[in-house]
View 1 (cartoon, rainbow, N blue to C red):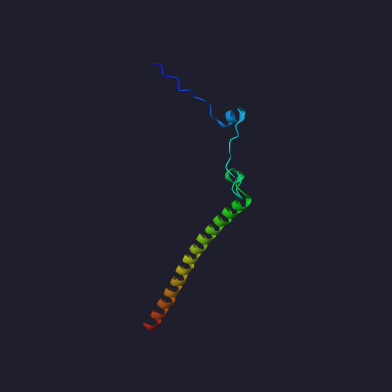
View 2: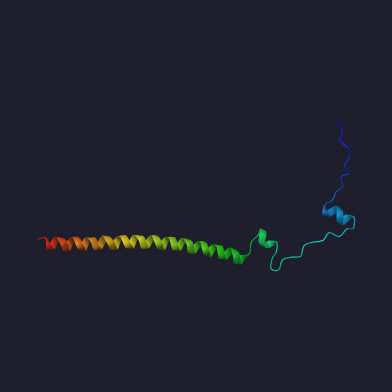
Length: 89
């Protein structure tokens, strides 16, 4: 089955520029650059590294607080048990 010719033309940017047609471009956003999409900026990398370090430090501090609370409660229980033993005599 033969398909009819639909008259396809190349409308790529390169072919239009070769024909001398100006292809309008969108204006660049202020403060935006293509490097930020591919390589990342040093400031944002440092921000994410700092945020991750703070998250880890917070987890460690919470774990240490939990351990210290448990030790404190165990010590209080031992003192109470020693006091109760001395009163029961």
